[in-house]
Image (cartoon, rainbow, N blue to C red; front, side, top):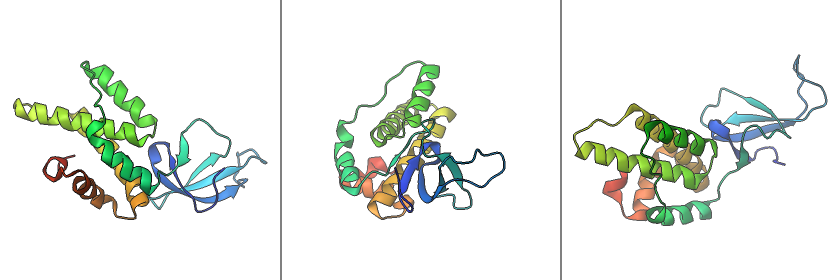
Length: 173
């Protein structure tokens, strides 16, 4: 069970802070059930109420700084997702995003980055689907990494580039 003021990942909402834990006094909500009150870190004007015992949405602890640094070291060895069929690829992206796993988010970013580079080299446009999933994966990954590293979200890309020595390549990742 999480504690008040813990940072967690809560599904597609990304980083959230546990503001409160307890029953809710809201009409229509069953009495006696215990809920987390979550505040999305990057959307401070909203709150999420979720039962403590719910398994519908993935809720996990934030990655630690050491794990972030280890994942960054492993970026060159992370295999991209190669799915040739557009619909299957989009389905794979959706499923991967739903897992809320940092390594899997890196796989999406790496895959789409390589696809974007290949399409540009062929004189083709980047697909809107790739742009959308690239942005979603970056937002979720960089949001979590930023908290773990104690830096701003918009500094994460440069931080990764500096650590991997791939400054030029990572500028568009």
